[in-house]
Amino acid sequence: MTMSLISGLFAKPSFVVQPIGAEWAEECERLHGESFAFGWSKVDFESYLTDRDVIADGALANSGKLLGGFIMSRLMPPDSEILTFAVDPVRRGGGVGRMILEKHLENLERLGARLVFLEVADDNAAALKLYERAGFREIGRRENYYLLADGSRRAAINLRLEI
Ligand SMILES: CC(C)(COP(=O)(O)OP(=O)(O)OC[C@H]1O[C@@H](n2cnc3c(N)ncnc32)[C@H](O)[C@@H]1OP(=O)(O)O)[C@@H](O)C(=O)NCCC(=O)NCCS
View 1 (tube, protein in one colour):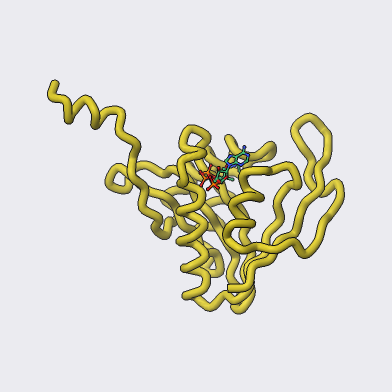
View 2 (cartoon, protein in one colour):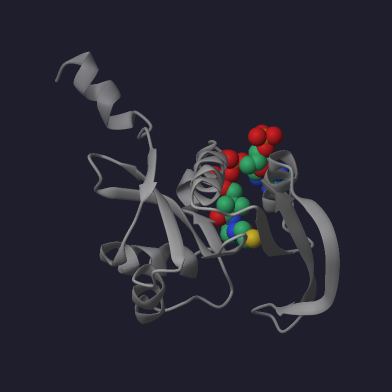
């Protein structure tokens, strides 16, 4: 085996962020289930991914066969709301999340969004950092909003970005 083949086996996939449709529902179910205490089903994703008011972008690699992460928002110009956002646990910490969020915000703006809203758990350090860096500002807090798998609860932080 040549060196280039060997290094190719270990190379990090290079992701491109593109719109995704219902063909990715099953993979979204998997990534979501590995990212949140209460996962959404394939049917939930089929419904979102065929909803004309939902904008979904995924990080694709390997000629469009590998989904490294995805984000979905509901768009009602001038408002939009990020519904969910997840990166495959094995791909985290490598900038995939940032790439997805940046491209998605560009797409939302191009499609008429001027405000982007979202809710995030107050202990989600990685997501909070990503959103703060993108320019989101805190506009509210809901105590005990999220129920965790162990039965405990966490507050949600409401964030808003003007684009
Ligand atoms: C939030 C999430 C999408 C980020 O994806 P990612 O690919 O790991 O993000 P990136 O690699 O682009 O890193 C984002 C930033 O968070 C930082 N970060 C990563 N893990 C962190 C941690 N545990 N604590 C603090 N900061 C962290 C990174 O250093 C990076 O900041 P930098 O650019 O200043 O270095 C991913 O962690 C995830 O899927 N989490 C579970 C689902 C979730 O929480 N979704 C968001 C709900 S609102």
